[in-house]
Length: 276
Image (tube, rainbow, N blue to C red; front, side, top):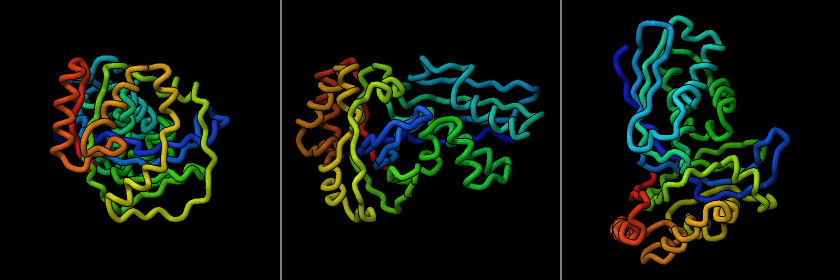
């Protein structure tokens, strides 16, 4: 097996409504999810021996545990199903997606490695079996199994894949604070009642923006409470020309905002990206 390289794209919740807390500790959410061209790079190759070699490189490798992470969990669960009993792998993840930023880098990594093994190693797991394994690793990993715009309807974990490609111009800002998703959800007191919703059809960016104007992120207030820097970033981005609810009308405006952001907040990491 030669060395394979996989691009593992980050996830963005364009809207997020928290409906209720479930008995298993997770939350039932309604969300419109997209993926953008910011990505980690995963290198995979077979090695001799019985022990895997998992490593992390890149700017955002700090803080990721080598012993317990989403990749080791994928390998553990596959071996539990009697795959790879006598085969070890060398896997390196170049972390270009900030760890603890809420961009789902670890979840995307796990989903892509799981999909890769099923395809290249001919595991012959069907979609339902893959989803079950993904769910055991993390609640949002099944969403990342397909890098398509996705609607979480809030109905028993229902996932609807959308054919539309939004191609949005966005500015991603990370204030170098590791944000605990678990902590945010545990302390969230903002819940939305699920209202009847017609089929989701968005044919162009204008209709998408109109839809998002009536949406919210129920975790925003809680995130700001624990990480006050978030409010400054949100207010700054909203004040930029050509920007509506964090989405820029063109790439030129997004790049200009990025340059301004670097001047105003030189210690923050920020990147211009486009949804895929």
